Each structure stands twice: as C-alpha cells, then as structure tokens.
Length: 200
Image (tube, rainbow, N blue to C red; front, side, top):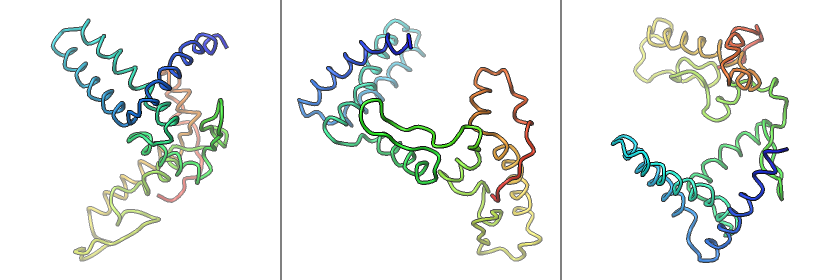
C-alpha cells in the first residue's frame, strides 16, 4: 500500500511526459531504441570506470524505457519489444496461464494458482518440446533424414536422456516454487515433489 502511494506521483509524471511526447508524433519504437542505445553506452562508460557519467546515462535510458509503453498506448501503436512480449503473453493466455484485463489497473494476471503452473508446461507453450532435437521428442518426433537406425543412434539416445533430465527438473518446478527460491532460501524445492511428468 505504501509503495503504491509513493509510486502515484511518479506515475502521474510519467503519464504527463508520455502525453507530451505522444502529441509530437514521435514513434514509440524510436524511444525504445534510444533506451537500448543509451544502456549500451552506459555499459561502456561503466567498463571504462566513468561511473558518474554512466549513472547519468542510465537515468536517461530509464526515462525512455518507462515512457515508450505509455506513448505507444496513447498513439495506439505497438513497440518493437512490446509486440514480441504481447505475442508471448498471447500464447500464455491461449494456454490458460494468464488472463488480460483492460482499463485502469489492467494488465495480465495469472489465471491459475502459481502452484498449478509448472515451468515445463510454460516452456513447452512458448518454445515447443523440451527435447533438443526432433528425433528425441515424445510429442513432436521426426526422424533424421540420414539416420540409418533410429534404435541404435547414440546421438538420439543421448538427447533422449537430456530431454528426460530437463523434464525431471522443469516438470516438478512450479511458478510458486520459483518465487519461493527467489531469495535463495528454499533451493530444496527443486527436489520436493514426485509429480507425474507430461510427455516432452
């Protein structure tokens, strides 16, 4: 609650600045690229030991970073990185992990309890099967064109073990577990549950 009260004046300033920039017609993608370039410049300054200058450049980069989204919304446009994020969130929404709410205070929220969402399921939704190669996948199996013996292929057998090892970790770990591990206090959660694993 206190954090929200402190944030309100800054949100008001951000929205006023965004409204002013949006009225000039400056595309939000320009602001996104300014932020990226300034962050790279700040990294170079830090590496060269010019910490005060780097801090100033990072503040400028942060300004562009926080106003590009509001400017895009006011102009009814999509930023380069905003479009990418929207695509990922769209996939998560279609899979039933999140739901969206429009208007003030809107955004994306979890549609299920964090204890019911496994990391493995999220990764499969965004990136597809866990298997590193198609011939090791259980759900999207495709044999290699030049494979002479699928059963005897040592590469496929090794990659199948990699798939199983990844599934062993990712299909036991939930979003709630990750949140609990955020402060490093409960790494044991990785070994906690013996839940059934979906096919990779």
